[in-house]
Length: 520
Image (cartoon, rainbow, N blue to C red; front, side, top):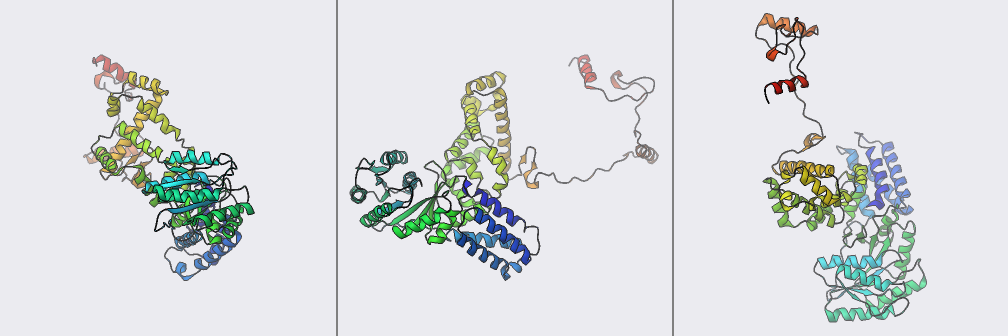
């Protein structure tokens, strides 16, 4: 969700100033609202939307519900969260399916918004729910648009209806009508029509889209909009609403680094809900849009529900139970470790999933520095091991580690570090599985926030049972002298010095000589 990264930083910084205040004054609220207004305007959120949003936040923040709260700062955060959910559409909107199949879904939007790729993502998402979608190549103007949809359809495993070659040849309205008839005959229960776009809003585009809508009578018309388009987002959305009308909005390119706040205005200005969000280039980078979850991500409150859903898709339940049993019984191997990493990578980005945790934005620097290619290097090292070595890393001697390093294109140091990290991870997981508190290297017990529990100070002084001797030794300690002077006589093994001088503790060299003397 890089598109809203800057907005998230500004909003969390503005709200963080309230956390140290036990009582909120009108000036505190006004200062926070002013910072929120600046953050939204800098993010290209529509001016009218910003005015209405900040007015509601100020009114509620100064109201009785906040003033009577035990923690007013948390109440203001809750108010901002609820109002942000309102801007984003309020409730989650799901697709409306036809009572008599096929359900017709028409995609509309400007050229470059990502309609063709989105058609493949939507088809793959519908197939996961047991539907049989049909992709329709009704974009006959853009060069190679038909071929692109065929490639995307093949990747998604969906049938593509493309009777015309495109590149300016063919009637898109007739193609759309024939596609609905084809879907009914071949028992496809969903038809996804990819329509043509333009670099800007024009009369010809609107007329063609309106004709396709009249010819197919779609159950859903989804307006696909680039989240990085800027202030033109609102004007474009209004033009499509007047010319074609649409039932829902799809935000694409939410992984971009532009400000993207104008996309937040679309639902509020048009009154049409955001239905889906596209968050990357892969076909799996696609999810239903939940206003409450998106608001939580923007305010860095985390999105645990989406994280759980993605984890459930990434991991098989039976495999998870078997893995838990292996961890608890110390049978977790490098093969299991490799399998878990591959499942995470196939899910579409480990860092994206970590970014859904509450407070993850505070770790942005560490997350940005993480290179997911490290996972590929780790895979190479593990795959260069024999099955016996993966099952029992303790047999990895020097020659084996050198062979693994050469086979994976890495160094022996890399192999050593992997084995060490695996051992630490296995121990931590075993501790957690048994209900204990894991000890993180360099951080201390996790339950204590990196600090060890305070230990009572040991009482210093003599422990002698003789009162006279104890008093003499305590007096010597107070004066900075040794409490128990070394005997002037020879110490054990003849290491004591003569002449009554106090002999220091034996050095490492002395101990080594002693071991040679004893034949060890």
